[in-house]
Length: 480
Image 1 (cartoon, rainbow, N blue to C red):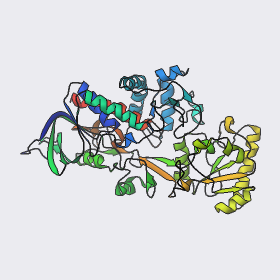
Image 2: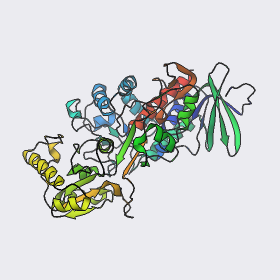
Image 3: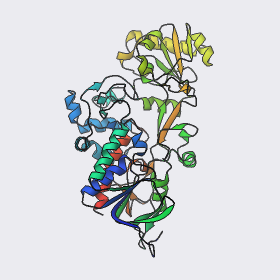
Image 4: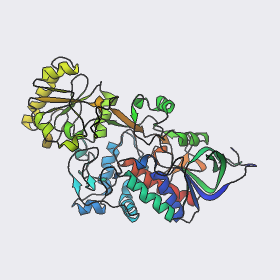
């Protein structure tokens, strides 16, 4: 929409749309660069970032890693992420992210975000402890062949989910920097001048239509599109029919706004996928598909075995453990799951689960031979976790979901996720058109963009990417 004859209700230097981790970081850095900043959010600040686990993927030799007695460097971090986030991650962004990770960690600490100096040395979606550092697949094959294993999951110092703490510190810092946050404000369109430069937005707040003008730039940070069924069906069909990991507001609106202004998109089919499997149980036994076949080394990052299952193997999917493996996992770390079947023989398990006859018997026989020899010849699971499975057996059906509150099986598909694709941007958050030219006046960061990701994902790379490149977008907009 052209700005000709449009009245202005609010005028500022930089306008940020969306106050999750990326938007808040952009607002902070724009304000610290000397710009006046107004930040709009359709609800309250926080978004999906606030309901996340809160871990950030950081490394290269952070103070937390050093406090835990660990050595790391940006090259090792890059080698791991290049493979884990691939194929075809954004190499320029990824290189900057790894090289700047220590400084970014220090910046987060400067906002008052603390990290307990201890390591959780198990496997989990979210450790049940307050340890500040966790493994995210760096110590599993094939990554051990590519880079020195170093844990890089940095968890804010709080019990359980830490996204709320991260957003509390970010929004506090934004307000202290002078950012004017307008909640309950839904952006309905971008404003462009006669030369095509983005110069503001149209918005609606409490039933009133408003016009916000930005002298220097507009930063989109509105999240992904997992909550828009039509966009998911068109671009990320792997998530169709499954649950979403979000606050319910990842509706793709920012992506649509960017495209309407001339921006292009990248990696729209890429998704994070989470299968309702307890990693601590799976690693002590095995994951099998709907044919009773094992398909992955179970000690990988859980999102990796989830992608391997949902994208490449026939469902449903089951965790098979024996009594020793089950009892070795403390009850609070089982996430409330219960076996679908407990039986003395694998033939009984096959019958109860509807698996082909002798499928589990053959799979377990091969696994037990390898375990006895101390080498997983099929998938290279770390010998730390190898042990022959013995009766009785328990099988957990991923479709029953997690039940940490003990209210009964959740049902559904047992699969959830969110989108990774979005607007194509430069390393400074400039939205790019199909030819790679800058859409003037328009910036973006966070899940509204494709970020550093290719087709893969590791926990903490959304919050890490969002805050890191949100900062860069905010600074670039302030100097635009």
